[in-house]
Amino acid sequence: MRPCRPALLTLCLFAVSHAPAWPSFTGLTLIPTAETLARGALLIEPQVDLSTSSGSAECRIYNTQAGISERFEAGVDIDASKEAAERVFLNAKYVFLSPAGNRPAAAIGVFNVGRGLRAVPYVACCKQLSGIGLHFGGVRTESRSRWFAGVSMQVSDKVSFMADHIAGEENYSAFGVEYAFSERVALLLGEQLPNGAGDPCITIHLSVLVGQ
Image (cartoon, rainbow, N blue to C red; front, side):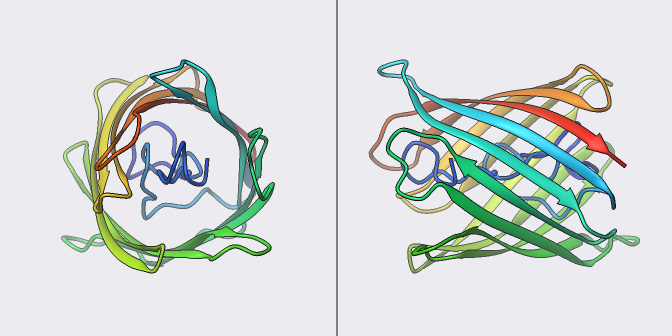
């Protein structure tokens, strides 16, 4: 599930404070993309978010994602952070519009599904232009509808750059670089910057693709 976001995809469901993390191979540093893993593929992605002020780990999550069909994927994310109120979250995504001609790909999805939690639905679109992925859509968080946008660029067979933004003072902007050691293993290093009050954080994702 990589097409629109070159190398691999990414989703602490709310890193540090409210910055969502998205399952890799199908997202950028913050936002989801209109991609899904291939049927039978399984993605395992441990994630650590570090506070830039204290250097301590604010968030530890084990993200997983499975390709159920060519258009549908679902996953279970385990939050191993010390202060986590809920440990297990579910997510799912369905691509309802495939890219064709000038038409972008489009998907609907949901994450943060768990006991006592409010699910977060979203719509994501993606358009590829000469190796550059343009991503845009909307998400419903904390009873607010917010737009998001991002861009990804694969500069070589192994290196990809990305930048993304979720509107709203409670959300974040981010940029990252991903290095693919192989077609199945990649490392993402990014920085998340709060739109309003809050501390920036460094996010690190190791993505391992198995199955298929």
